[in-house]
Image 1 (cartoon, rainbow, N blue to C red):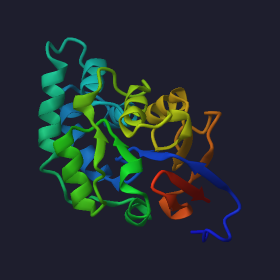
Image 2 (image 1 turned 90 degrees about the horizontal axis):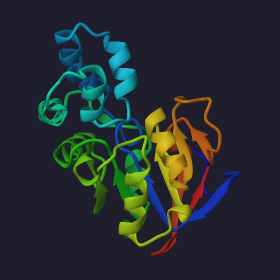
Image 3 (image 1 turned 180 degrees about the vertical axis):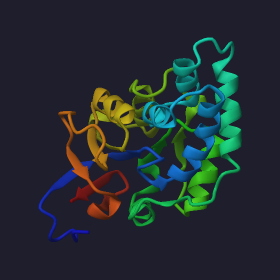
Length: 221
C-alpha cells in the first residue's frame, strides 16, 4: 500500500460508503455453498446463478431464475437465514480492517444487499468493524443496480452523495454506484467495460484514508 506521503492520487470527500461482500469481506465460499442448493434444486448452472446474484438482493435473483416462484421475498429471506450459519472461510478483503478503522465513525456507511443479521454475521466473522450506519436489504425498495441504497446512505449521513466515495466490487453494485453520482472505486476486476470510475483497486491495501476533521476525509492511492 502506498503511504499517504507517496501516493500519487488524492481525493477529499465528506463520507465513505462501502459495499460488504467482495469489498470488505471475502464470503465467496459461503455464497457458493448457499446458492448451490438453490441451483441444484432447479437444474440451473451454478456459475450463471452466481454471476447474476453477485451484488444483488437474493429476492431479485430468485425472481430472475424462478419466475414462477409465488414468494421470492420469502425464498430470499430463507436463503439469507441459511447463510447466517455459513461462516467458515469468511475473511477480510486485504486492507479492510485497517481502512475501516482509519475512517471517522460518523462519516462511513455500509450499503449491502445482505440482511442486517447476515451483514453482522459476516463482518463479525471477518473481524471487520461494523459501522454505526448501515443500509441493508430491509431498508430499500429497489436493490442494486438501482442507486437507492447509496443515495439513502448519504442522506442518513447528512452529506451530498456527490461528495462521497463509494466502494464496490460487483457489476450491479458499480452500475448503481455510478448512477448515484458518487466517486466510485472499483475493487477487483469486475465490469472492465464501465466508464466513469474514479479508480480501480486490487483491494483496500491499495488505498489509505486520513481523517482531516470529523467531516473531512482524504483518500490516497
